[in-house]
Image 1 (cartoon, rainbow, N blue to C red):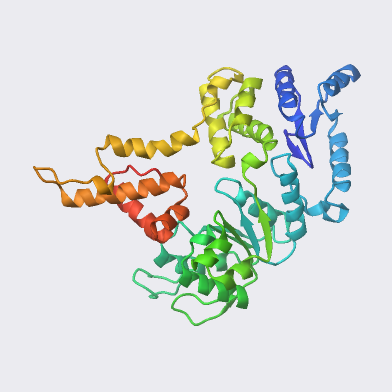
Image 2: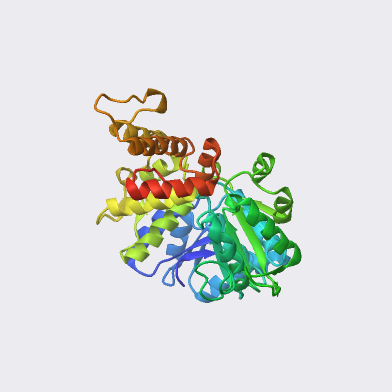
Length: 421
């Protein structure tokens, strides 16, 4: 059986001499945070004792033993016997991950709308996908839509579809994402960035469970599960008038909060080991491990970019480790928060541009249009730096819509690509 997670444990297969060192490293890094089962078909009783002395929770020698233990572990799961069939395994060993798994098991088979909240990079889409896979819609379609990445004027057509001739460029009729997701799940990511006009139409779809394509009159009945995710505080957005209160209540039937990685440090060794072995497999190279100093360095970082930042860091560490079988602390490159914030400011200073209050017209004159562009770029860079790349928060700082900020960024990047995000 391939190495991976089974129920609430990490399973490590030992089939060659090289696997012995790898399994020992996994035990050292992960045994304190998640049970480790060693699957070693050639293990003698003495070898099994040695594995247990190193911290293995179980030593298994046959597939039958492994299957039986997995079944027994699920039957005694803390989520309860009635939820065992829908329990899914997320990567992590913290109480927060176990709470999320239990919440997924509770809601997976229900039709109700689900709202997932958490900072960028915490794994909200993973939680949404696991909910879909654990429920009775798992064989239906899974459709993901990033509401913040689609221009405002195209979002409604993308979601609800359109008829031929509904607008310029609509040369044929087209089903929208909701129709495509019928009898399955639609995942609306960055729901907080959805324009107010589209929010109103989405509310009607959620209430009536039917849609009309743009330019059409036919009502299309839907049986679709809606999961929405946001990295902003929607209740605060409601207070500011940026998000409809009635839509907020309609979406927030069942809520799952995904905590930041810094709030669940016990997940760092498990995730880092998982990402390292995953990347080794993708690169088709022997599996590597972290030495204790490297793992300590990973544990000590606060991870403002959360799981996504950790995954990128692990991939970089693998590259820097070269042909070594062990990733050292010197291979672990981590950008500090100060570096992330200071980068745009250093760039602006290097360009010779000064903040608005210090602009002066030189004797030889200046390029007015370019000066305006530099001024606008300065404001965008400063707002993005202050919010660490969060476009929604940056737009709030500047009194703009998120879609307006994104459009300005695209225009300026096309001319002089220096924006930080």
